[in-house]
Length: 386
Image (tube, rainbow, N blue to C red):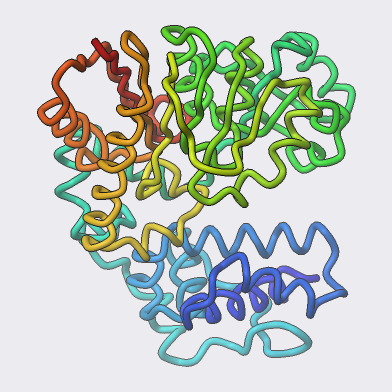
């Protein structure tokens, strides 16, 4: 596919997203209907689409609208270039109208703060309250694609050995300071899916900040661990690699569907609970459902779908999870509360409310990570009972 044809495909997919379809669903539908597109074309179209979604507000402001076509024009205008090959021939977009051509030649307007940072206006005060002077630099980073990180399974290999193995497969990686297990992939990331290191459990795809949270928890935990909100199982696998016997639980067990296979591949000791958790545990990690604001680089459409009402509902769920985990924690036990959010309402405020309502608990430590640290945004509070 020529570049203009890729842009036409991106326009089509973005229009479907604006009509209410999930981005991934729209990409899948286009891929199934476009058998002529090679793997490189699909990746290029995907990059165009997600680039536009990450920068939706600024692209719409500069492109004069929120259609797929306007969004791509807005991105081009921000880069100081004119679209090439928009001739209307073959699979290319139709030529620019007179109004579009005039827009592309006009001086760039002054964007509002929310437009320039590609953030919903109602969330700006929340980011300011949480991040202070780091708010604008963090939000600016969230406009770009996230790095690709791997977690080295230390039960199977060392970081040095994995770096060498990946290099032989045409994948360049380097250590990252956020976690002793973290590697940042700097070239050849698309070759990971067919790599032996991934297939044989020596590495897992996992954000560096997520790895840091798991290792911080592991440093104070002892005995069997209950991963109360296991989801896909990334942190359960990370804890098992550190030698813990892990039991994985999730309110929606289907999320853990492929965890047994991944655990077997990694040589990990993980029991997957089919029902509710019970008993008393010496260590519980609750990676609670949240806005995902720390990972909006990876799932940018969530940023535009998030609402104040959704935040209130999530706060209620987070409070319920803390209360449930408190009842499951043994005297003297450790409870780790984590989110991939950077909002105080989901982090410090929840912990303050918990401590006020639950006598006999103390805060051991808390840590906030942002994209300025290199990975996703995360929060971790370490609590001890008694």
